[in-house]
Image 1 (cartoon, rainbow, N blue to C red):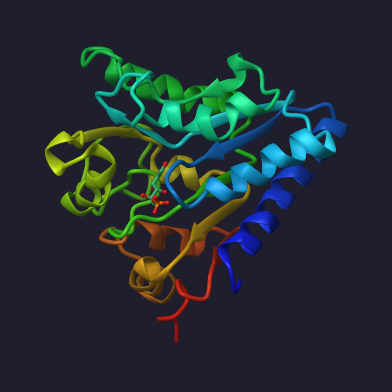
Image 2: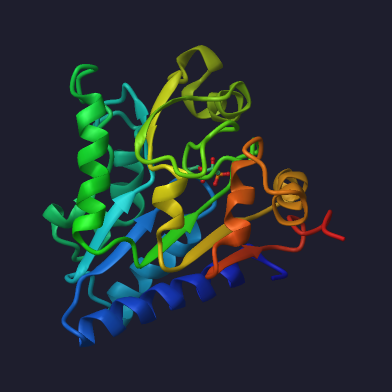
Length: 243
Ligand code: F6R
């Protein structure tokens, strides 16, 4: 797409159509959601559709990809805060249908917590749609280089590049958490439909490696190459290194 705005509206329209289709079948619509700068316009458009066109989120169940660890819900850098600010506070989703990894779970409970998050996704029959961004390390969710193809929800140590990219929001790299909870590659790949968003020159190199490179654990997003219903929605700057 020429612009990320135009592209984001098309993606929001696809999500809205899926919500309506599931509503007509009287089924929950299970969405996997991302935070960060990439999906902001998609959420803005979904909020607009809710307010102006009557799009209802009453049948929507969401699972967010990740959360920093440790991280409190009321911290403005939390993904919990981000999702409420950009989407949940502005639509009619039922609070009990919102799932975001809990950045305050105790270290002792963390392992079981991650297994339960995975099982909860499965209990809904899996994710109908997964929205992704991509990090400059090639991470999807917080699956950093080295992540296994079959990984599930777990705690992970963040890559230095990822922490450096997050540093401005935390007013310095020393304030960026070293760990996170993330859905795994296996969790993401079990989604029936995946859309990855990539905007700007900053993402051009990693998108080239992801789309045109060999599938490798050192660029975890390459694992999407053999998912049979994935679309990369990117703007012209992000596509500038593709051959
Ligand atoms: C966020 C997430 C990350 C981001 C990625 C890109 O929930 O899972 O993988 O999608 O770091 O971030 P932005 O969009 O800020 O460039």
